[in-house]
Image (cartoon, rainbow, N blue to C red):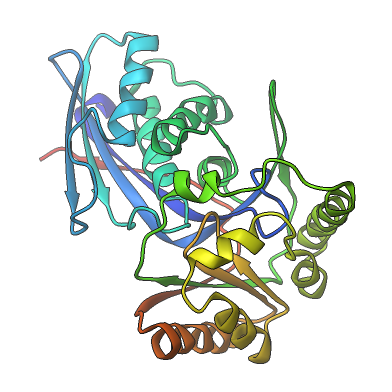
Length: 316
């Protein structure tokens, strides 16, 4: 019986903002990601545990976003059973790759699969966004939506929530470099300007429109031009050691464009081939090491169109 088996969900990392699309644009990538394993239990409520190598990951249920969103779902739907949920936390927190979103998404998808009457996947987004609110103080969807739904997502509006999946072509390859430092999302949000000029707004609108067209058409050159960000990058770049040098290295190595992934410190570059993406990523990693003395991880990926991936495994 399915109810005697465990659900395993992998939720992928994301690149949010894509430069100009602050809080409204995001894509899913293949790696890294978080895993949640869940199963029904006779006792009501949530039994939660964490497996991780990262010492800064909260393990207490009242501090962890995966447990928090799972509890929200159990409280709303009142299933006639409890849930044992194990988070395999593979992503470092404060990475700029949607770590909290991946944990939240994996948890809500797993709990939903165990329910007698699962709800539509897109309707799970509001729960995952509450995980973002708990993690950073802001219920943004630009990480959670693509991690949940896959592909490229545009958050057209937050109230009421309106998320649009952008059709994409797989001709763009994304090079992502994660330096081994942390930047708290809340801190990165607090330094943002509270107001911008009309000239800056017009510049951003043009880039966001260009990003949407470029993603849909698979035009790496257009996307590269449009990842230019006149709002967040000028202040957030100061939080990343050797930021300008790393960006310049990416462009010299052949990238079409380069910017900050989410709130940082990870950075991404836009390229048109796997080979080019690896070359660009190596150049970025080298500058982090030489100019800032920081080791980093490399991820190369096309857009992940699957999003949260479900598999069933036998109970032990």
